[in-house]
Image 1 (cartoon, one colour):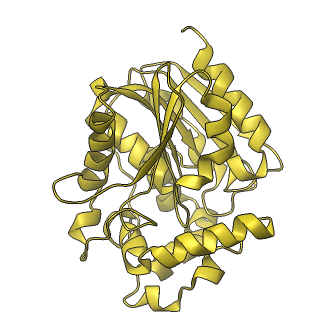
Image 2 (tube, helix red, strand yellow):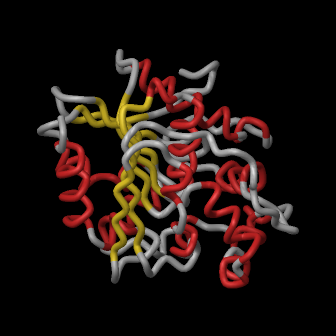
Length: 268
């Protein structure tokens, strides 16, 4: 419960450091199923449903989806487990929440793992300067239009999911979700044209960061990864994955699970 908004999460594993996993669009906690199985023997793993999705609450209006609210949901989940900090893992919008959480609450961030969501400054730069990224962000501009949620369907949102049984599970989760709330992430937090590069001084992170990017991602181009190391004071591990797209942990589940486990067990 975060100030009256209930956040649903699943948990696995009994011992070891806490890992909080945050999905993106259009997804739910089950996105991390393979990684949960891989980590539960060495870590306590929690996978949450973002507000607006699946079994979490779906408050109305734009402001409940402002980034500070999304960050506070993650903090509420950590506190609910009885811990004071966690390894934060995010993909897509969950990745943006993960970056912002680490910047806002470094004391609660043990380590940071982000999949296919470049550092916010990198994304800002590419939107301002890279015509390919500008063109490929048309989907986000469409989502920002009034009434855009009325064009969405559970079936359409799950076309990327491979396997009949898995897709059926996703369709059910999307039917439980609020499409308007899901698009409020874009309306409230995604930059709007004319795009301007964020040249402000970055919030420097000291915790170790693992950044993973499927190189076939058409929504978030890998050029945004350049210079990430200039914005971090801690250790950065950058893993690019050829042959994988935006949903890198679905396209290459064994590789991603192995990479996460190896990196998390290093220097422990």
